[in-house]
Image (cartoon, rainbow, N blue to C red; front, side, top):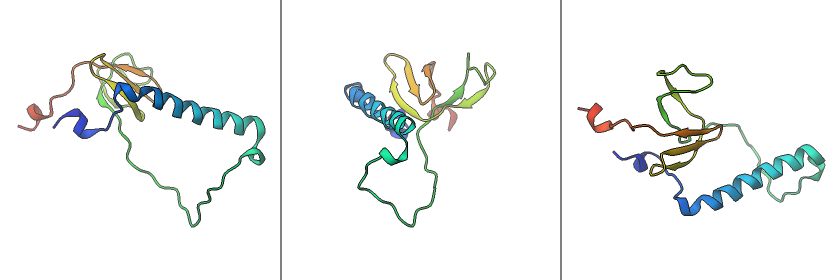
Length: 110
């Protein structure tokens, strides 16, 4: 199984769109803090709602240099937003990661 079979990652050409969408989210939250709920305009209503969780892509692997996970211990990242395997970098909600060697699933399934 290949990495791209496990997680959908935006190609480099879509990175500007991701940046714009995240910037829009940050601006909306800043406006809420600055102007309060009365300033929010929306035509969308959700009824009979309940909070739920859904799976999001993350990376799991041995960490090195992480502020909260000891070197060599296995940990999981926050939500994965961008991966550039050629550059050896991944961006999660909290931080950038330099990608070391990937785990070969085929070797570990035998």
